[in-house]
Image 1 (tube, rainbow, N blue to C red):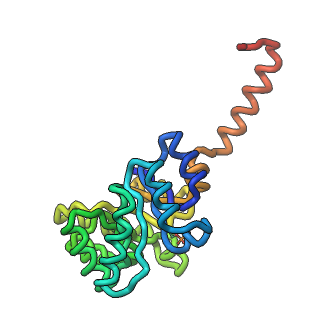
Image 2 (image 1 turned 120 degrees about the horizontal axis):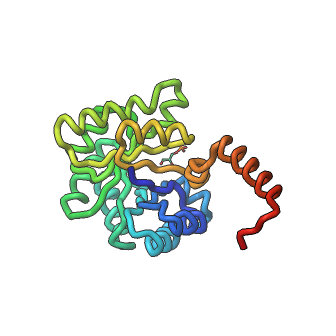
Length: 217
Ligand code: G3P
């Protein structure tokens, strides 16, 4: 499963990228707001750091304007994936932009039928938001499983990009289901390394080592 990092925080991306943990980046208008940066400048900086797809989201709501914004964002770098909302206009823009050979990430997906439409419109990625489904007491990971089955039934090549990941359990669940990609905030990716038994075991080893009186260096 590929790891995308869901942030516009350049320092956090750089740290994870140095560890080989970043196969791509996703941003959205809320994350650009949080960064306090200009969208074009920060996205260009991220594209310079990361080789994989970097999603940059349009804010227009009509297809023609979405296409124009998407073309402008795609000029930033060859690894831009234009992010479009899963609306009828977004699907129209998806068809046009993918026909031009651009990567498109269709976002704000909350149903299997929406994911089916995105695949038929040629999306490179579909982003089902699992945390936001959990927020309204539905099961976000069920949606990932449904989309996996549908895409495999018909051989759609659109990659399932599990988004709105809030916890390490979400990561495990979508990996077990077979999501192609997951995008998570940097702190969730860092928490994947944590386990209380690792911490407790390390403490025991260090105490016993001290008792030996030895040094390695
Ligand atoms: O990738 C989408 C993500 O940024 C949304 O996450 O936590 O705001 O639902 P969240």
